[in-house]
Length: 248
Ligand SMILES: Nc1ncnc2c1ncn2[C@@H]1O[C@H](COP(=O)(O)OP(=O)(O)OP(=O)(O)O)[C@@H](O)[C@H]1O
Image (cartoon, rainbow, N blue to C red; front, side, top):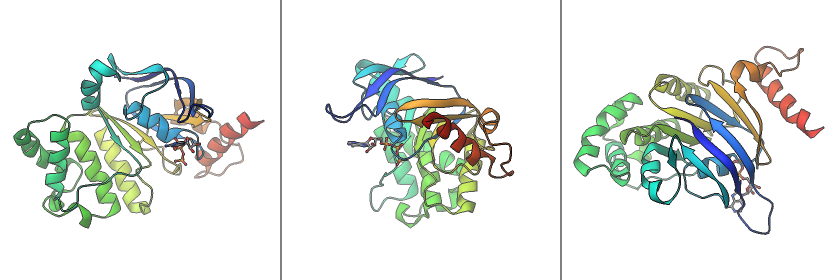
Protein backbone atom coordinates (compact mmCIF):
# COMPACT_ATOMS: atom_id res chain seq x y z
CA UNK A 1 0.00 0.00 0.00
CA UNK A 2 1.28 3.50 -0.69
CA UNK A 3 1.97 6.11 1.98
CA UNK A 4 0.34 9.30 0.84
CA UNK A 5 0.98 12.83 2.12
CA UNK A 6 -1.82 15.00 0.81
CA UNK A 7 -1.21 18.72 0.83
CA UNK A 8 0.53 18.48 4.21
CA UNK A 9 1.81 21.49 6.07
CA UNK A 10 3.60 21.25 9.38
CA UNK A 11 5.34 23.90 11.49
CA UNK A 12 6.84 23.42 14.93
CA UNK A 13 5.94 26.93 15.95
CA UNK A 14 3.16 29.18 14.74
CA UNK A 15 5.57 32.05 14.19
CA UNK A 16 8.10 30.13 12.09
CA UNK A 17 7.88 29.09 8.48
CA UNK A 18 6.58 25.58 7.74
CA UNK A 19 9.09 22.77 7.86
CA UNK A 20 6.81 20.76 5.55
CA UNK A 21 5.07 22.97 3.09
CA UNK A 22 1.90 21.88 1.25
CA UNK A 23 3.59 18.64 0.42
CA UNK A 24 1.98 16.16 -1.96
CA UNK A 25 3.99 13.00 -1.99
CA UNK A 26 3.12 9.39 -2.60
CA UNK A 27 5.61 6.73 -1.54
CA UNK A 28 4.98 3.62 -3.60
CA UNK A 29 5.45 0.18 -2.09
CA UNK A 30 9.08 -0.92 -2.18
CA UNK A 31 12.30 0.42 -0.68
CA UNK A 32 12.62 4.19 -0.86
CA UNK A 33 15.57 6.28 0.19
CA UNK A 34 14.89 9.81 1.40
CA UNK A 35 17.72 12.27 0.81
CA UNK A 36 18.16 15.95 1.50
CA UNK A 37 20.48 18.42 3.20
CA UNK A 38 20.52 19.03 6.97
CA UNK A 39 17.28 20.68 8.02
CA UNK A 40 15.43 19.65 4.84
CA UNK A 41 12.61 18.17 6.91
CA UNK A 42 13.35 14.44 6.49
CA UNK A 43 12.96 13.52 10.18
CA UNK A 44 9.85 15.65 10.40
CA UNK A 45 8.38 13.92 7.36
CA UNK A 46 9.02 10.50 8.89
CA UNK A 47 7.62 11.58 12.27
CA UNK A 48 4.46 12.74 10.46
CA UNK A 49 4.29 9.42 8.60
CA UNK A 50 4.59 7.65 11.95
CA UNK A 51 1.76 9.82 13.36
CA UNK A 52 4.09 10.92 16.17
CA UNK A 53 3.16 14.47 15.16
CA UNK A 54 0.17 15.67 13.14
CA UNK A 55 0.09 18.13 10.24
CA UNK A 56 -1.69 21.46 10.80
CA UNK A 57 -3.32 20.98 7.42
CA UNK A 58 -3.59 18.17 4.93
CA UNK A 59 -3.68 14.49 5.71
CA UNK A 60 -1.62 11.33 5.68
CA UNK A 61 -2.88 7.91 4.65
CA UNK A 62 -1.39 4.48 4.46
CA UNK A 63 -3.58 2.86 1.83
CA UNK A 64 -7.09 3.68 3.00
CA UNK A 65 -6.08 4.14 6.64
CA UNK A 66 -5.89 7.73 7.80
CA UNK A 67 -3.31 8.72 10.40
CA UNK A 68 -6.06 10.35 12.36
CA UNK A 69 -8.26 9.81 15.40
CA UNK A 70 -10.49 6.78 14.87
CA UNK A 71 -8.08 4.82 12.72
CA UNK A 72 -4.93 5.86 14.57
CA UNK A 73 -4.23 2.63 16.43
CA UNK A 74 -4.86 0.52 13.31
CA UNK A 75 -2.58 2.88 11.38
CA UNK A 76 0.17 2.54 14.00
CA UNK A 77 0.04 -1.24 13.87
CA UNK A 78 0.76 -1.09 10.13
CA UNK A 79 3.42 1.60 10.23
CA UNK A 80 6.52 1.26 12.37
CA UNK A 81 9.02 4.04 13.03
CA UNK A 82 12.61 3.98 14.12
CA UNK A 83 13.50 7.55 15.10
CA UNK A 84 17.06 8.89 15.07
CA UNK A 85 17.31 8.61 18.82
CA UNK A 86 15.55 5.54 20.09
CA UNK A 87 16.19 3.82 23.37
CA UNK A 88 15.60 0.40 24.80
CA UNK A 89 14.61 -0.48 28.33
CA UNK A 90 17.71 -1.18 30.40
CA UNK A 91 18.31 -4.78 31.36
CA UNK A 92 16.08 -6.46 28.77
CA UNK A 93 17.32 -9.28 26.58
CA UNK A 94 16.82 -9.06 22.83
CA UNK A 95 13.89 -11.46 22.99
CA UNK A 96 12.25 -9.54 25.84
CA UNK A 97 12.72 -6.22 24.05
CA UNK A 98 11.15 -7.44 20.80
CA UNK A 99 8.27 -9.15 22.60
CA UNK A 100 7.67 -6.02 24.68
CA UNK A 101 7.32 -3.88 21.55
CA UNK A 102 4.90 -6.43 20.08
CA UNK A 103 2.82 -6.17 23.26
CA UNK A 104 2.92 -2.35 23.13
CA UNK A 105 1.54 -2.56 19.59
CA UNK A 106 -1.44 -4.56 20.79
CA UNK A 107 -0.34 -8.20 20.59
CA UNK A 108 -1.22 -10.57 23.41
CA UNK A 109 1.80 -11.11 25.65
CA UNK A 110 2.02 -14.82 24.88
CA UNK A 111 1.67 -14.29 21.12
CA UNK A 112 4.36 -11.61 21.13
CA UNK A 113 6.73 -13.89 23.05
CA UNK A 114 6.13 -16.81 20.67
CA UNK A 115 6.50 -14.70 17.53
CA UNK A 116 9.84 -13.27 18.61
CA UNK A 117 12.40 -16.00 17.71
CA UNK A 118 11.32 -16.07 14.05
CA UNK A 119 11.77 -12.32 13.55
CA UNK A 120 15.05 -12.33 15.46
CA UNK A 121 16.22 -15.05 13.11
CA UNK A 122 15.19 -13.00 10.07
CA UNK A 123 17.50 -10.19 11.12
CA UNK A 124 20.36 -12.62 11.79
CA UNK A 125 20.50 -12.26 15.57
CA UNK A 126 19.49 -15.71 16.79
CA UNK A 127 22.82 -16.18 18.56
CA UNK A 128 22.16 -12.97 20.51
CA UNK A 129 18.54 -13.67 21.42
CA UNK A 130 19.17 -14.05 25.16
CA UNK A 131 21.86 -11.39 25.40
CA UNK A 132 21.13 -8.00 26.91
CA UNK A 133 20.27 -5.38 24.30
CA UNK A 134 22.90 -2.98 25.63
CA UNK A 135 25.64 -5.47 24.80
CA UNK A 136 24.86 -5.34 21.05
CA UNK A 137 26.93 -3.35 18.57
CA UNK A 138 25.34 -0.39 16.79
CA UNK A 139 24.64 -2.43 13.66
CA UNK A 140 23.12 -5.26 15.67
CA UNK A 141 20.89 -2.79 17.53
CA UNK A 142 19.61 -1.42 14.23
CA UNK A 143 18.81 -4.92 13.03
CA UNK A 144 17.05 -5.64 16.31
CA UNK A 145 14.97 -2.50 15.73
CA UNK A 146 13.82 -4.03 12.44
CA UNK A 147 12.84 -7.21 14.31
CA UNK A 148 10.73 -5.03 16.64
CA UNK A 149 8.88 -3.67 13.66
CA UNK A 150 8.40 -7.09 12.08
CA UNK A 151 7.05 -8.82 15.18
CA UNK A 152 3.65 -7.16 15.00
CA UNK A 153 3.42 -7.45 11.23
CA UNK A 154 4.06 -3.81 10.31
CA UNK A 155 3.76 -3.28 6.56
CA UNK A 156 5.81 -0.10 6.40
CA UNK A 157 9.02 0.77 8.25
CA UNK A 158 10.16 4.37 8.57
CA UNK A 159 13.85 4.38 9.43
CA UNK A 160 15.50 7.67 10.29
CA UNK A 161 19.23 7.59 9.53
CA UNK A 162 19.62 3.97 10.61
CA UNK A 163 23.20 3.66 9.33
CA UNK A 164 24.72 6.60 11.22
CA UNK A 165 27.83 5.47 13.03
CA UNK A 166 27.93 2.05 11.37
CA UNK A 167 31.17 0.89 9.79
CA UNK A 168 31.05 -0.01 6.07
CA UNK A 169 30.62 -3.74 6.76
CA UNK A 170 27.69 -3.19 9.12
CA UNK A 171 26.19 -0.70 6.68
CA UNK A 172 26.42 -3.23 3.86
CA UNK A 173 24.88 -5.86 6.12
CA UNK A 174 22.02 -3.50 6.94
CA UNK A 175 21.41 -2.84 3.24
CA UNK A 176 21.49 -6.59 2.57
CA UNK A 177 18.75 -6.98 5.17
CA UNK A 178 16.64 -4.36 3.38
CA UNK A 179 17.09 -6.32 0.14
CA UNK A 180 16.04 -9.54 1.89
CA UNK A 181 12.93 -7.87 3.29
CA UNK A 182 11.76 -6.78 -0.16
CA UNK A 183 8.26 -8.00 -0.87
CA UNK A 184 7.49 -8.55 2.84
CA UNK A 185 7.58 -5.01 4.10
CA UNK A 186 7.99 -1.55 2.59
CA UNK A 187 10.78 0.62 3.86
CA UNK A 188 11.48 4.36 3.75
CA UNK A 189 14.97 5.23 4.94
CA UNK A 190 16.36 8.71 5.45
CA UNK A 191 20.10 8.93 5.09
CA UNK A 192 23.09 11.04 4.16
CA UNK A 193 24.95 7.96 2.91
CA UNK A 194 24.48 8.03 -0.82
CA UNK A 195 27.49 5.96 -1.78
CA UNK A 196 25.73 2.61 -1.91
CA UNK A 197 22.05 3.12 -2.64
CA UNK A 198 21.76 1.20 -5.82
CA UNK A 199 21.41 -2.33 -4.45
CA UNK A 200 18.90 -1.78 -1.69
CA UNK A 201 16.48 0.83 -3.04
CA UNK A 202 13.86 1.07 -5.77
CA UNK A 203 13.07 4.76 -5.46
CA UNK A 204 14.78 7.99 -4.45
CA UNK A 205 13.09 11.07 -3.01
CA UNK A 206 15.03 14.28 -2.49
CA UNK A 207 13.56 16.73 -0.03
CA UNK A 208 14.67 20.31 0.42
CA UNK A 209 13.01 23.09 2.39
CA UNK A 210 10.07 20.82 3.12
CA UNK A 211 9.21 20.20 -0.53
CA UNK A 212 10.04 17.32 -2.83
CA UNK A 213 12.75 18.18 -5.38
CA UNK A 214 12.98 14.79 -7.01
CA UNK A 215 11.16 11.49 -7.01
CA UNK A 216 12.07 8.62 -9.28
CA UNK A 217 13.95 5.39 -9.75
CA UNK A 218 17.64 5.02 -8.84
CA UNK A 219 18.67 4.97 -12.54
CA UNK A 220 16.67 8.13 -13.22
CA UNK A 221 18.29 9.78 -10.21
CA UNK A 222 21.76 8.75 -11.37
CA UNK A 223 21.09 10.13 -14.85
CA UNK A 224 21.38 13.63 -13.31
CA UNK A 225 25.09 13.05 -12.63
CA UNK A 226 27.54 15.29 -14.46
CA UNK A 227 28.83 13.50 -17.60
CA UNK A 228 32.43 13.78 -16.38
CA UNK A 229 31.70 12.22 -12.97
CA UNK A 230 33.64 9.06 -12.29
CA UNK A 231 31.87 5.75 -11.69
CA UNK A 232 31.47 5.38 -7.94
CA UNK A 233 30.79 9.12 -7.52
CA UNK A 234 27.83 9.36 -9.88
CA UNK A 235 25.18 9.22 -7.14
CA UNK A 236 26.87 12.04 -5.23
CA UNK A 237 27.19 14.01 -8.44
CA UNK A 238 23.48 13.50 -9.21
CA UNK A 239 22.55 14.64 -5.71
CA UNK A 240 24.61 17.83 -6.03
CA UNK A 241 23.24 18.51 -9.50
CA UNK A 242 19.64 18.14 -8.35
CA UNK A 243 20.02 20.45 -5.37
CA UNK A 244 22.32 22.82 -7.23
CA UNK A 245 19.88 23.23 -10.08
CA UNK A 246 17.23 24.31 -7.62
CA UNK A 247 19.39 26.97 -6.06
CA UNK A 248 20.09 28.79 -9.32
N1 LIG B 1 11.32 19.80 17.86
C1 LIG B 1 11.59 20.82 17.06
N2 LIG B 1 11.23 22.08 17.39
C2 LIG B 1 11.45 23.13 16.59
N3 LIG B 1 12.07 23.03 15.38
C3 LIG B 1 12.46 21.80 14.99
C4 LIG B 1 12.25 20.65 15.81
N4 LIG B 1 12.73 19.56 15.15
C5 LIG B 1 13.24 20.02 13.99
N5 LIG B 1 13.07 21.37 13.89
C6 LIG B 1 13.46 22.20 12.75
O1 LIG B 1 12.79 21.71 11.59
C7 LIG B 1 13.65 21.77 10.46
C8 LIG B 1 13.73 20.40 9.81
O2 LIG B 1 14.35 19.51 10.73
P1 LIG B 1 14.45 17.95 10.44
O3 LIG B 1 15.16 17.36 11.62
O4 LIG B 1 13.13 17.42 10.06
O5 LIG B 1 15.42 17.93 9.15
P2 LIG B 1 16.32 16.75 8.58
O6 LIG B 1 16.22 16.84 7.11
O7 LIG B 1 15.95 15.46 9.21
O8 LIG B 1 17.77 17.20 9.05
P3 LIG B 1 19.08 16.31 9.36
O9 LIG B 1 19.53 15.75 8.06
O10 LIG B 1 20.04 17.32 9.90
O11 LIG B 1 18.71 15.26 10.38
C9 LIG B 1 14.99 22.31 10.96
O12 LIG B 1 15.03 23.69 10.68
C10 LIG B 1 14.94 22.05 12.44
O13 LIG B 1 15.69 23.03 13.13
